[in-house]
Amino acid sequence: MTVHVLRADDRPAVPWKNGGGLTREVASAPSQAGMSDFVWRASLADVAEPGPFSRFEGVDRIITLVDGPGMVLTVDGTSHTVSEPYVPFPFPGEATTDCRLLGGRLVDFNVMVRRGRATAQVEIVRDRVLVSTPAETTLLAVVLDGSAVFEAPGLALDRFDGALITDARDEALEVTGIAALVTFTVQNPGGAAQRTRMKITS
Image (cartoon, rainbow, N blue to C red):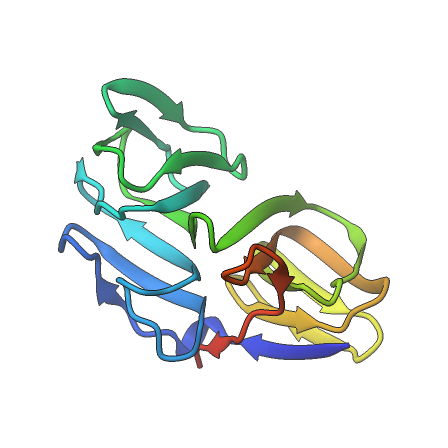
């Protein structure tokens, strides 16, 4: 198993694409990709005020409430209440999306993939889990509450720390709290899956 640790304290806060909030990138691919040409991206965002979300053409998004009372997202005119923590909510990035807070600032975990080039699955885990990464996938683990430990190397992750994992076969991750496991699969131009090249934010 290969693990690249992504410590929360090492992430700079940068403005959203539309300037309406702050985001801290956990990891993205390929290396050196920007907001206009990433294949996949995962981040944690601080949302303190209501307003529109940034628009991302051709991108699929999955947002998960981590802290705070939640929000109502109006996606292309349809309202969705996102108030239960740790429940992933998918929506298209090009949709006109507006956010109304339900009582105060919040933190969310955001996953984005370029449609037709990558897919992502977000799983929320709360205890011991075995993780595997087939050759065409990359796994991102992010601790959303509490802590986690990879048993074999004895590697500990604190809250909001992350790890990019490849070449894993039934490796044990002990979660004391709650973690998100995101499986990214990248497609090559011919449609076959391939391993992604990773940008590691440190």
